[in-house]
Length: 125
Image (cartoon, rainbow, N blue to C red; front, side, top):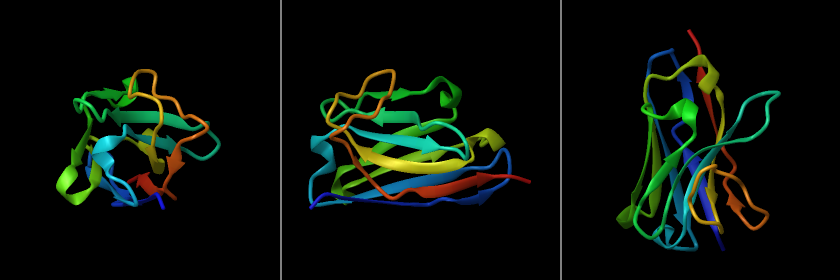
């Protein structure tokens, strides 16, 4: 059974950093593209970043380029999202997603994707 469990969210001040983790079970992460999505209160879901299964190439939505970094540790079957220079507009629930489609821009969800339950990131002073 596919399971994705996010962790690492919390409250951070503007300009601070957090690292989100996505621990997978029931499958090997390195065989599938993995994405991070987020949804802020009252806003639509947004694809933040993805990492491919073939060559670990990555994509980012424009608003996080240069601040966020997605990576994979195959030995731990875990994907990470390092978030630096956080802004209040980064406040959202962040979801880890196993994708059927290839990792490419724009980062979009598909009907066959598998989602974790999410972790809340709050950027506030």
